Amino acid sequence: MRYTDPSSLVSPVSFIRKQYFLFKENTYHFSKRCFDLTVVFLLSPFWVPVYLFIAICIKIDSYGPIIFKQKRVGINGEVFTFYKFRTMFQGSEAKLNQVYHLNESKDGVIFKLKKDPRITRVGKILRKLSLDELPQLWNVIKGEMSLVGPRPPIVSEVEKYTLEQRRRLMVKPGLTCIWQISGRSDLPFRVQLKLDKEYIRTQSFWLDFKILVLTIPAVITGRGAY
Image (cartoon, rainbow, N blue to C red; front, side, top):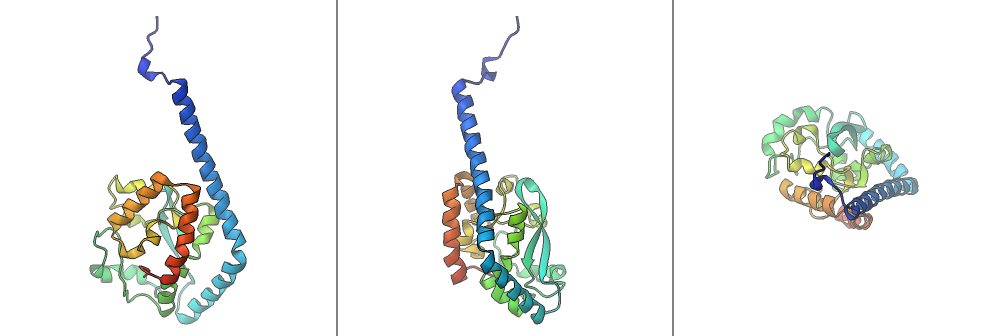
């Protein structure tokens, strides 16, 4: 007679509960994707002209490409091409080692410098108003990012992550997140990580909507943006 370990059996209640949460999670992700695309396309009459105007200003202000491309880490550690308006002088990324000793991030994982000498005149304005992030709408359209989610880190930052810190890669990255409306770059990395983990644990459609709404005054005030 074949022996069956009782601990390997799944009760009907547990099975139904598991299927319910799986359905709920899939419904949320599907709704979130539909919401992202709907918002992007409905607002296109507003952001497309702004996009073109900024592109002209960047081209007039300094030499170099309009769009800055960088490899970032997304959901489950997948690397993708991340888009931003160029806010620094051409070749500034290669000069990071020259200013890294000025890093104002207390945790040492991310690099933050309020008065970075590599930033252009137009770049300072774009960063203050967070308009340099506008090209990431293309990342949203491509499905690499969402409107709401933890900000995507660069590859070199993730290489310094502990296993616990890698938990922020469990969901699709976003244009805005909880710490973006709670102090942004003024917050140390450990606090950003804590808020990202809190978002992952409690994420819902209404929380996403709330974060999007609160992002508007955060962008207008420019607090913690540099």
